[in-house]
Image (cartoon, rainbow, N blue to C red):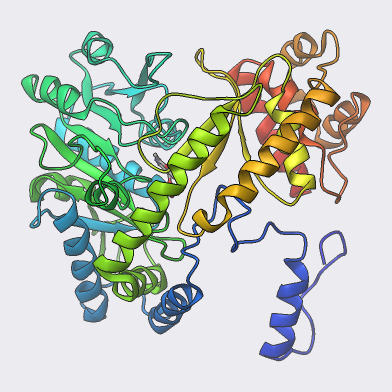
Amino acid sequence: MSGDVTVLPHHGVTAEELLARLAEAQQADLPVRGGKVTAYVYDTGRPEVHEAGAAAYAGMLEVNMLDPTAFPSMVALEKDVVRAVAAELGQPDAPGIFTSGGTESIMLAVKAARDAAKIERPQMVVPVTAHPAFHKAGHYLGVEVVAVPVDLGAYTVDPASVEAAITERTVLVVVSAPSYPQGVIDPVTEVAALAAARNIPCHVDACVGGWLLPWLREAGAEVPPFDLSVPGVTSISCDLHKFGYAPKGASVLLFKDAALRRSAYFASAAWPGYTIINATVQSSRSAGPLGGAWGTLHALGREGYLELGRTTLEATRRIAEGAAKIPGLRVLGDPQAALVAIAGSPEVDVFVLADEARKRGWFLQPQLSYAGIPANLHITVTGVTLERVDAMLAVIAESAEAARERGPAVVPEGLPELIASLNLDELDDPTFVELAASVGIDLTSRDQPEMAAVNAVLDALPAKTREAILVRFLSVIYG
Ligand SMILES: *Cc1c(COP(=O)(O)O)cnc(C)c1O
């Protein structure tokens, strides 16, 4: 399909034909089930759970969340889902909002804090390991991000650094439980306390961990307090489309109190049309994702999540131990959730390792070096991982050896300096494609690309230049 000129067909086709075409279009996709893709997808290993979620999604598909008075089913389901999450996250009566994902939850947490503070030129204090959704929220909402470094052994933020970064204009302080890159939990109790002492709200980004840490704790892991039960924590985000295993488009944002939640809401009567009262960024939106999340929560139940927590904990420990024993590799920090970051060495280039693993049918997610943290590969352990731990470790070991033989990806002499000196805004897309081709990077190929060279070049560039390149890249792939 892609590449050809597609126009609306004159005659419609059957649903059967559509599904066949979708299957064909997905041939080059990474597999969403089976555990060989260690990012983006969350597989319980129980197909019937995903089917139940999909069925409930379809059951709510055509309900429009635009107007809660028109569709009371959506209010009932949302309250049910929010209550379930609040009960596990330290405050059973916490008011909440069901959102489309972590980014939207974070956007609304930042909006609530900004609007509650009513301070000119607001700032938020954010560890460098926090998700870019805070930078996006800052960019969209006009809140300046004040980034604070993390400890380069533990990869968690130092409360003293947070304290030093707070100013009169700080409207929000952020911690992660855990942060995505290394899967470690910031000192929530200490940071929330120092924020509270200054009357500043504290958001806990538990997007990835919120629906996992409670089960890991119950399964015997040591999990420090991180939720709304911690004094000073005023909001927390928890994505159900991650370790809730719900279909995508599902996150919950909880608030300490209803006043803060009201600051996240938006109403408008400034037009002659229907009344606008929105809890989220989107206005018209399908209740499908809400149905999917509700259905998945009920299909698994406490027992299901606890069992998934147990297997995830065991798999994570085995992967961290196993990876640390592979020559040339090491695990960054002490993974406290189900996220493992594996760094290489001068002999074993992780970007080359990732390409080698991909040739063997496995996807390991490359993470670029940043703020003193070395480049590494990220593994998200899910319910399906345990039965494949040995296979995964064998592939990582084999790919590491292959990477050692191939040697590190080479960045052409002078290229980073050249790119950094270009005014990327002045290049058109075809010139950009040519430039990439001149250094051996084919952006137009439909084949599985060798990503090591691309990652090595990006890794050698400052973050701002990386961002400019990534925007051009997106523009090129959408043609
Ligand atoms: C995934 C994630 C987010 C963003 O979530 P999306 O659902 O992709 O928008 C935010 N914070 C953390 C820690 C995450 O892991």
